[in-house]
Amino acid sequence: MPWRIGLLMAIDCGIASIDFLSCCCGEGKPIHMVGNRIFGLDLLRAYAVLAVVYAHGYGLLSEVVPHRLYSLPTLDGVSIFFALSGFLIGRILLKVFATDHVAPADIFVFWCRRWLRTIPNFGVVLVLLIVGSVLLGQHLPDKLWLYFVFSQNLFSAHPNFFQEAWSLSVEEWFYLTLPVLLLISLRVSLFGKRQTIVMVILVGVVGVAAYRSVLALQLDIHSVEAWDAHLRKMVFTRFDALLFGVGAAYVALYKHGLVVKWKWWLLVAGLSLLVFDKVFMRVFFSQFYLNHFTLTVTAVGATLLTLGLSELVYQERNLISRLVVGVSKISYSMYLVHHSLVLWMLLPALEKHADEFVRVDSSAVVYLMYWFLTGVISIVLYKCVEKPIMAVRDRHFRA
Image (cartoon, rainbow, N blue to C red; front, side):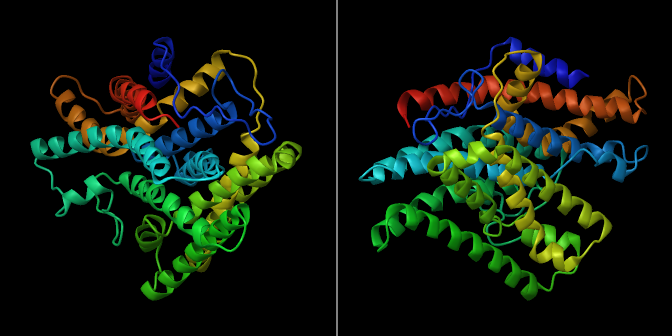
């Protein structure tokens, strides 16, 4: 398939690794890696982005493939991203807060590293979408400036423009608030450092879940669309998904032996929860379950999956492992470009102009174009923006 060719191109060009975690996991025991990457987490990240891109591509095949059949291979990719992000961020922050004295400068370095990791790609895609919308005569949101501070879904439903940006807002605000919350809690707490961190995680998880339930009752949500807009895609309603990941990082750091012992059970439990939620919502749809439980169940499932895969051993370098790592490296770019830029802007424009020269009436051809364009643009964005910026970050802001 064209997108596989694109991935091989990326790998052959020798794209460098990102999100490198070199610290050991508890008592000096190393996480199993391929080279300098955690292969199990690369595998999870690659699956998550492919699941999201795959799911959004259904509209191109909706007339020829039943949705129930098409969606069989997919689990909740965004929940997996949240748990994975919380796990990785949790490892970094726990390392920072493990020192005797945490200075504001340490938090500032953490923020700079996160911002340099996420904002450049986001900014480039946002500008491309704005320019493209103006040239095509499409409507821009009234408060466009909110996108530049990740606040377009802070207190209201996310606009239709650049829809995938909703999850970026969740993560950016989480990166901003969690270190401050931990710093304040550790300075005022009467308990030990570890106990305080656990309390912050538990209170945050319970508090967010309770907030979602209260919000669902207040807004009287009775449809999947309203649930999606006001519960699933709002900033503060999804912090628990990342906090579960931070909790998993704590367990991996301080209870590493248990993670090694139970890794396969963690993997099975995580998959079981994600599959249960998907099957239950298909067969026994319940608005009550959707409003109050599904986001918690998928967050826990994704977290258990992340914890189990963080110990996945894969020593050999072969075509499969290289493909997995390659997709993982460009996953952030793929997530940013696949929907609004490729699916809703470039593909319609290309189809319109292609019809002037050759009749394009095959759903399969358009579907392959969707994957090909997503792969190629993601590779270009990674090599031209993300990789150079990451090199600058690692030179000037060392973890």
